[in-house]
Image 1 (spheres, rainbow, N blue to C red):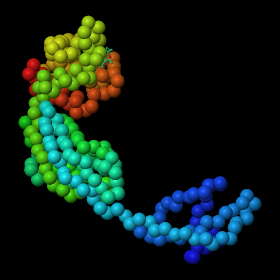
Image 2: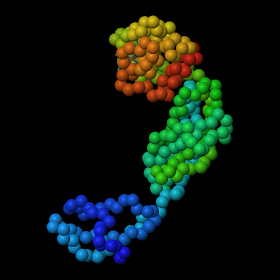
Image 3: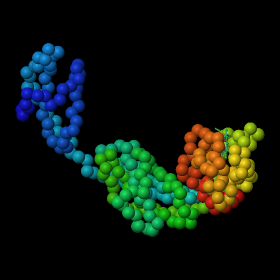
Image 4: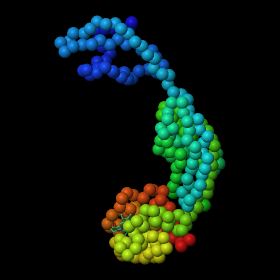
Length: 264
Ligand code: HEC
């Protein structure tokens, strides 16, 4: 019964029957007396006390098996792992820190190269140099900031994106819904079997001084200006109109152009 009744520690809103006390110290027992006060300021004099102990801080890292896969598709590498578990955080609330190196065991664990969204079990690392090998360690972190210290590593070699395997599927999924057939915007048909001939070395309509795709020069390819929403002679809207292409996918198309925009 250590309360001083001279001033209340907290005053609830009118009419409520619960109150949440915040800002307490972890692992500490607190004792409470609650008194009712009417509009005239009359306070009851009860001394009924209840107590509770705040939980100890969570210092336990998740349980995690580490990275299980690294697969290159063109110049991006997709990492995967099995969800970690934790004593206090739900799997959907765990984040994963990705550490990248160009030599085996060369990761610096001081700062993560990438951090995933909560609950992710895969991550696509974009913008990698074709022909270069990359080594990855993934660590799980709970909501209290406790992270695993595992060093399981997977590696993959980034490749030059090819038209058939990496570029056309992106165009088919993101562009051909509009850009196909007789009514394709600006006559640009990006569907399978048509796209290559329709864009490589072909003058654009919006900026006729620029080719849609100019091998070796993504910055001078009007298609990339439309995807990036910027460029020396960008006009009209950014493509696709419904929302920008994810950076990893834009980088795949750009890397294919850099490598010569081959029909491979
Ligand atoms: C919702 C329909 C739609 C989708 C999806 C779409 N576009 Fe377009 N696109 C248009 C329209 C309409 C235009 C003409 C207006 C403009 O240029 O903004 C256009 C114009 C273009 C042009 C200009 C062509 C020229 O010759 O000037 C390019 C390049 C282009 N789109 C590329 C793409 C790419 C690449 C994708 C997919 C990543 C895509 N578009 C997805 C509707 C679409």
